[in-house]
Length: 228
Image (tube, rainbow, N blue to C red; front, side, top):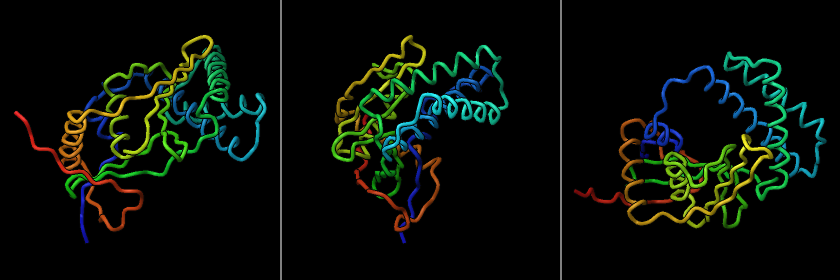
């Protein structure tokens, strides 16, 4: 049996670009983001099944998911703020329905292995199953900030034959602004630096797993030599 150190892509991003301890407003923002993700997941599932939920049904789902996420985060919204947030969520759902990612499924987790010692789990938000994967943000992230750029590069390493598309449904804009941008393939230097970063963090923080028991498409990379 072969053992490797496994680390998820999101952990690499989190450790590379750490955020300060969340304040109450951050907890609220995270709860809203979780509710939006849940609503989009359910909406997308319904569309793939040929169902078309009414606006009333989606509003009810959004409200339920928001209340659950706020309770889980032990935070609360004033009634007027909750109503405003629900309107924003419904606007995001309408924008999603018109976007290129409407009804697309999430791909299964792909893995890239570096020098046979460190593996990275990577799972973008959506894909078309043919040649494109999509990462979605509920804020404007075009051009991508450093943390999003790193996240997408990790996905590109795990899905090397796919074109990466960043889709932003900016809930802070009125009306919700939909932005879609193809992310260029990483340069050789970007590939090398990302592999080195993933390898170092994986060795330090990854969990030991048996390679033969890991499921999912696997891509192999050789660790580039250190420079300087």
